Image (cartoon, rainbow, N blue to C red; front, top):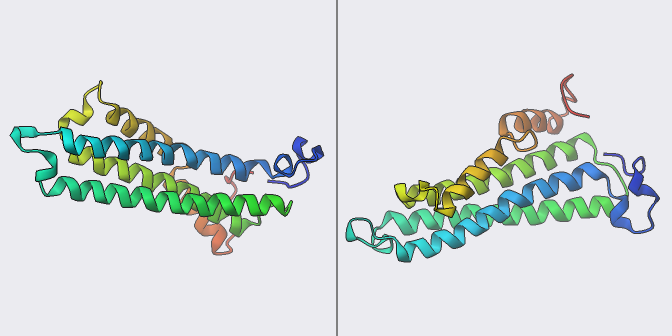
Length: 179
């Protein structure tokens, strides 16, 4: 988290002097967000292609609603990610480390982007029927991959929410906190 005590601090270009971990956390959130964006494109196409029991998905009221729910979760994740990334860049440009409250908020933002992306994909899968779980359907891969990403320590909601809340509430570090 240091703005000065890492190998990049010796470089002239400011981006190499950014504290390393906030940038890595921001990159961690980009992967599920991009996955959700790809899943939304696929889900939109499936609405026109899927016709279980000879009833097109677009003609079934829940399907467009599920897609809209997924789209809004993806949009929320993208907006939060953009704000998070802008904050990481601004902090890096100031060549300063995050304080505990900022660290807690960053961790919560990263985990929230992942939660929203995971929820968006789950909404799509729920609206596509059992075919979405077929091994040759890319949607199942998106779903599985983001579920795995959400279990990573940096995205594990139970871990991140507890630590982030402590930091934001001024309760400090616990003995098991990383760094």
